[in-house]
Length: 258
Image (cartoon, rainbow, N blue to C red; front, side, top):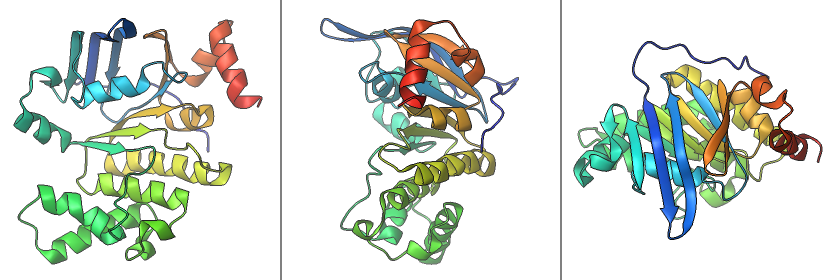
């Protein structure tokens, strides 16, 4: 399952560019000078302890939080400078896989997937919507669950359905929030395989927020370690963890020696 962790060489502008990014909440500094480029077709895993600022960074990428200082550019647009309408248009190109899957409990699987499509693509008829839902479910291996309710699904299946719902709009960028959290090792391996499938089949560029080194190692072209508000190191898995850095070694040992 392990993949070659190499940086994607790309001559084009990055799909996400973060430069000199600072964010504090009152007297609490969270991000203290973040720099990162995500290139077309690349997966980057962002590692860090709880409270290190990973979720804050994601919220700034989608415009839910504004920077105190610095620049976040997504698909060539300065996120902080966009008005509501422009921000909504930009978000159509970003798929967000929530930690808890965020499915609507009152809707079945078909309705959960059809909802964002019918809300954002007005010209589709019912047959086109049905085909799009079936295609997305086929991609995550759950075509047979189309009429199931979320309560009837396992945790891993809900994760897959949540990813399918983001794929329905064919995003250019995927943001994964703890995609393997709370899953058993076998189901985690299935989600890791799915993340790689999405990258290759849908040609997405992805940021993967995770505590799980196995997930990071097997999905990411590069890994970025977030610590004390900054990226302490960015590189391949071996570049990060074949190291004498006590902090990185402690993070490695916590994941693989527990």
